[in-house]
Amino acid sequence: MAVDPMLLSILACPQDKGPLLLVDDSVLYNPRLRRAYPIENGIPVLLVDEARDVTDAEHEDYLARGVAGWTEDPVTD
Image (cartoon, rainbow, N blue to C red):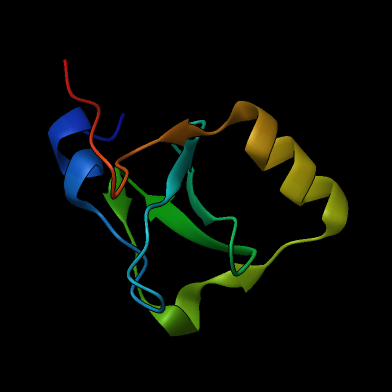
């Protein structure tokens, strides 16, 4: 089950309140803290205690495959 794009646009890391990357509809990733939050049955589990640290290899992989949810500086036309 895919994460709704509208939901992704408002989700933030519960620890640093920054944007997250969506990786394969299974993980929300915070590259600043190198923490991965699971998505279970299409529902993000954004609990600090449920996040896990990632390895250097996972970090590079997540950055390459991740889709940004939102940014602090919106693009204007």
